[in-house]
Length: 389
Picture 1 (cartoon, rainbow, N blue to C red):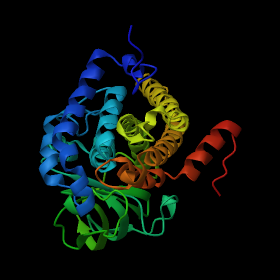
Picture 2: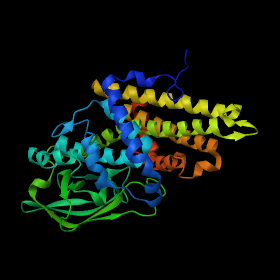
Picture 3: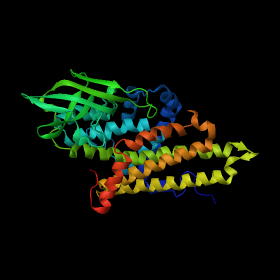
Picture 4: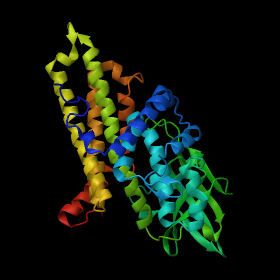
């Protein structure tokens, strides 16, 4: 008889269907072959070859894979989650690229765009021939997007867009930006193609986290857009917030991948690192750390699977997504920090993935809703009383 898989003690992976496991294995092979050999160098240099990787991700069907039609794969929520797990096991920047492309930019066009907008952009984005970004956050308005200062006003049949957006993944490499702005009718979404006069994107430098990811500031200086640039299917914050929930769902799976990668690195290192004449895996305190990592990893994995099945059944609520995002990011961070102590000084180098994951997770902790915001979402769900203001 053989014992349980030390990387999946409860065999959570067996809860996936054969098709879901096949998708996960395919993405894992891609990450092993195409990403892992280079990710340490990309992270150290602060680069991400988005233009090179996008068509490859498109050929795998990963861009907008949970959307229907227009060249999208139409995969289920758990299949998409399992793909995000493997992408983030390689690096959070890779999962962020796929998440922003599919769950934010493409999802906004798919859910709220005109048929002409869908036909124009979605097949190209699904194939990775076009890249999108999602402009909601502003320098002074992160958790409170209702206060955004970016505006769009009518000028005849056209729109004039003015303002700026900050911390925008894929910003400078995007062919189209989905931008949310205040109008006389409330918040509306606009499609702003690359090269539009008055639209500039400047990359953020000096990052200590998500270094293998393109992060930009978008600026709109009286950008004139045609009347059909607006997304006709939604008004108010319901539009962008519904897209954010899709991105958060990918995160609650992705962070399980980052946690697994850290735990696996610590386990392998502990079995090979010899101190006091034997591997440190044989010492009680090291075993305690590994056991705690394994326990929390499996619990986070189960949370992701359960939220995914709820989503597929049409029963998931915002509170379920917040539960998963809050719990799983926090869990992944703790596993990364504990794994670093097992690796000792080696844990701070790019030769091992642990501190890279830990640094990335510090960004994942606060983007797509801070821990404080998700705590308040759950607080409202539990008590029936909102406490945001």
